Image (tube, helix red, strand yellow):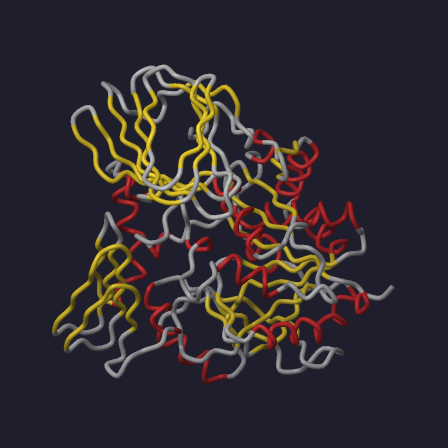
Length: 483
């Protein structure tokens, strides 16, 4: 069977944290899990981009272990039940992830193809990308690595560039790669665009597994060895594959561009006009957003008067702006970010400073996501805390008890099945129950709609580590976040 007749295994890299899109994107819930450029999350849009099963196999998603349940739920919402979700115990950059995916595909089909793509990019014309992939398949017959270069629409200083040869390979529309260039200054970027020889590096790669693994053995043997050992000692955890922590940690942390693509003789590039952007900053979201007469992108609860060229977003609180230009203002329930559009690449510096200062907002969101849903602290005072809890249909919390607090649950809407010691009680809207200190209890949602309730905790200590867990359908480890 020729490569032209084979289906491709999409490998979706979902390990990033997206700190330049803080405060909406945070380590606990990064940008790929958010609906930043549409109604679906960026991960979901990426999965749908490669959903044509005449061309693609079921996807492999490589993700941070902390995000596994959210990713599984987002895939389930799309009706995708056959994805392979591989959990990295820590981020070791894209070469380790790519090596792991290639080894997984080798087990399935040693002559197979993988398509590496990030979970947090936007492609406004998916059909154009699919067409470029199909047209590039003959180039993989000789073991070549096909890179997809985006024809620049402006002299961007935020992207890396690929310089292509002027003459095509034997495959029409596919060109040899001359060199890779890091993010240039503005004058250099203008020269690149004017030359017509340079393309934005989309970091989308179509790779024949056999030749990719061969090049890894030659160019990045330490990475491949670590990935091989981590996969060999991996364990299955529910529907996830957990890579071995000790083995994976031995991998050098290096991007696949540096480790392989810049050094191999097998790289070729296919130019494409697919409306690609890596959405690496708030100004990038402004650039692809729907702008009003003043050139503003307004998202959420926003009022703007005499404002020009700005990105204003209200997530949980009103943003009101008057007489300003070229600003980014993003308000979440716990943070308000204000910066000029031309400084938004430096947002990550704020995150680094907050992290050094030990500020929870650097990494944590107000909503704490769990495999059963999420909770959010509404108010905390002396010896009490009020939370909102949302439980997904069919989901249940762990069977547990507390040593230092009692709890009172009030159902706002939905149906709650409550275990309290030997009792089981069904609660509906506006009904409540008291859980005294020390009782063994569980909350579950037997209905088909989300369950929302208010929890009032009282006691001398209200930390999340005050728990004894007796049973958990999600098989979480004892040191993981509870409830």
